[in-house]
Image (cartoon, rainbow, N blue to C red; front, side, top):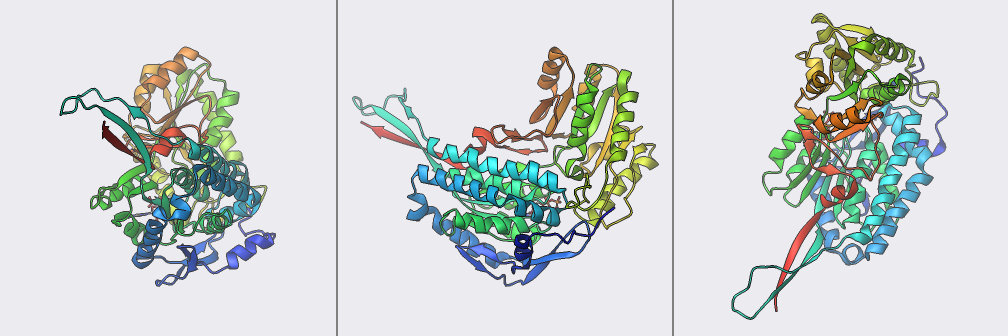
Length: 500
Ligand code: ADP
């Protein structure tokens, strides 16, 4: 297994890593009073770069810059068409720099280059192009109210205005850093908001590079501010800030709950994209040539560090043996290594602590009777590698079946009929996503209506596109991203009544 960073990094990547990490506030790149902190390559544990450790003071300055930009003529007065054009230029610039951005994402996050370059970069570009089109299609409605206005003889006419909600705090996680940032920036900018973006402390590098691209695209200063730093410092200051109107968050359910508390002061609006414990149902008539590779991606892509990862697989008992054997064999075949090594199928987890947490879930499961038919162990080389793991013999009450592991671990459970399968799948507080594998239209329809989740995939898993609303039921979140509902998060409605 190769875990050393290949020495073939592009000149652009080397330059980006060597540039001192600063914060983007009001159009200037500035140092943080708290100094810097190191970001690591999770495959090697080596330091990649030093970035600024933003704290309360920098958050104040960044929110102030965003507030000032919100009403400034160069942003608020920009025509919707011009705003859309800026978004489209951002997409073009990301596309032009996609190789370097992918390389940096791999180094900082650990994912494979293919995952970054073929999956996440096109996703980020698509976000900006999709919402670029929305900038010119935001409008209110005219309304004839039915209640008469006193004094007699006067009538009421009304219309609504759609206005940007204000300063947005975009707080994003480390699993898909650039894509997650794009999912928040694109609709917020289309709506005319201004933002402070806080990338995760583990993966700040692509956000900083994006900041340079936003400037080149012609976004006025202060419209997007970028504060790197820790969750309990910069993140908490941002979440509690009285001048932030809305927090757009993706991350853990625990942090989502902390954000609810932080939002109390000025009753910020929140969208929370939180954790999951996503089930996959494989019915007896499923095409296993589709289901096995589809679920391999759906479970193990990004080393399972995906909120919708298929963490619980329920398979009709008639095919459970054949399915599990194939899944385990495929999992055993995956090669672990540095994400920049083209031979690697999977990279490391985000860090050694996280790998230990994943291992602890599996060990506890084994002690309670689960069997690892694939993996079930740390990979031994590099600080954070864990073998892709398929467990059998699990029970619904085990922690590994109830809590989000966020690693390359799934558990296969047989079922005898679809009612049992649906009940098992819905036996969770989470409700993020599910998949159903079947050739039967009626079974797929019934399952999609009965499963409690924000997304139901049929014969696919982990498919995303900016047009498709994405959100969580239960403790998986509040609100929706993507599609038209994704834009609504960033708009307020103002009703104007005219007595005429
Ligand atoms: P994980 O536990 O998987 O690291 P988190 O939900 O803690 O995921 O992190 C997601 C994002 O939330 C990161 O940008 C992190 O810095 C930020 N964050 C963590 N704690 C807080 C907090 N108390 N307030 C605001 N942001 C936070």
